[in-house]
Amino acid sequence: MRRLFPVTYETAAQAPGGGPGGREASAAAGADEAAAPGGPTGADAGASRDWSLAELAAAYAYPEPRTDAGVPRPWLRANMVSSLDGAAQHDGHSQPISSAADMRIFGTLRALADVIVVGAETVRQEGYRPARARAEFAGARTAAGQGPAPAIAIVTAGLELDFSLPLFTSPLVPTLLLTGAAAAPERVAAAEKAGARVVVAGEGMGVDPARAVRALVELGHTRLLTEGGPRLLGQLVAAEVLDELCLTVSPMLTAGDAQRIAGGPSVTVPRRFELVSLLEEDGFLFSRYHRS
Image (cartoon, rainbow, N blue to C red):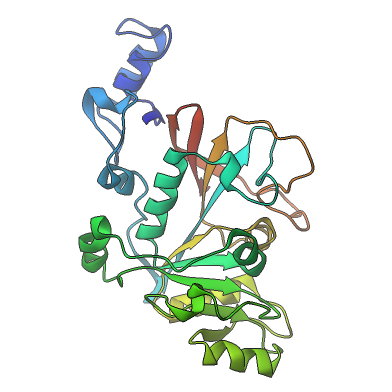
């Protein structure tokens, strides 16, 4: 793993054509002599080597907690992977376009979150299981006032889920179901009997993304992570509640008609995000963009 952005003296010096006298190195040295916050510092900042989980956690740390008129403000980040030609999946799954480094970051982002928000179709396709407690992050989670593992919050209109799965029968913390006020009473009863907590976050059958975020904050969850799928991410983008996108660009071409990372209706005016970090390993690019 190596950091490509923000550019530092070390990263620029190791770029092709760089070196202490190179144009890029000189510009970087004048702008920033120290390594960027989070991740390795010094000569290793631009070198390709395995990063520890602690270094990854520092590189992907959530912003400091914020309040608005005394009310905690959430930070919602998305973590997605895309091939070079824009596919978010191959044969219906994201794993074929992922990598070991991508999975390390995937696990780190989960360990930093209070709750993981995911669409029902993704739960069905990807075979979701409960988030697990990881000893490497136990101390940090305790210090941050978090439980042993993040909760899974499923966005579902019809609650058409298999409640016999481990996601409902053996989670460390109860699974949350975000649904509409008109959800079928028998499905709500089945979910609650299975141990899930049903949270109304919309009128009718649908879920309002902004209301879902507020409902999670009311439950004490402010560090939010969504792993999609594309339909849910599109809804979050359209509702303008997404604060950060962590996007892995896989050096693969898949062709076909796979979904993009975000689907649904287009927004009226495209929303610009700002690049804040770019890492690389084995040709995979790991980017972070914040709402600008």
